Amino acid sequence: MTAPRPGERKADRKAMLRVDQAGEYGAVRIYAGQLAVLGDRHPMSREIARMAAQEERHRKHFDAMIAQRGVRPTLLQPFWHVAGFGLGAVTALIGPQAAMACTAAIETEIDEHYGRQLDELGKDDPELSEAIADFRAEEVEHREAAVAAGAEQAPAYPLLFGLIRAGCRAAIALSQRI
Image (cartoon, rainbow, N blue to C red):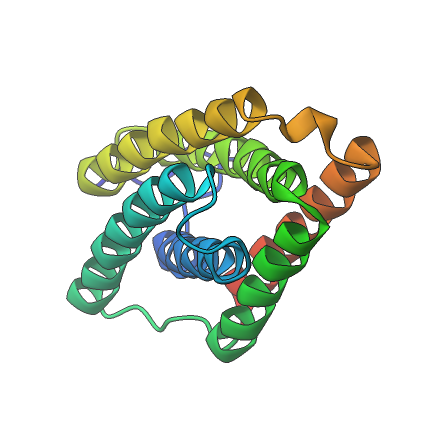
């Protein structure tokens, strides 16, 4: 590992792992809330379950990295447990397009978040960079699938999209620190 150049900030891998694990955990909970409302017979359920399985794989990978590297998970996990499920359930109650708008908003924010992390890491941590790059590609697929499934036709889409993105940014900031 190399020391940062003058004026350059060394990537805080512990905060990265903490927030990434929390985010993947939250995503699993959001999809659980959506599936609880939509059920397994809704036409969107198969796609949501597929995305949820990928998020669960991401979470498990970050769980292992946290344990391996001795990183403390966020203390907000009990809150994300409830908030994630609630966000998924509420958006699904609005309708399947709102559930997809939720996915599109979150995955847009996560794509940018993972991109910033990759820039910050550079070549200093190949294991973490590879995981983030792989998971980022799947998050982009989730966003594209959500848009293809009608996310932009959700009621008050621009407002819903903006609010969920803002909430996602807040969750990232809190989970890095707490």
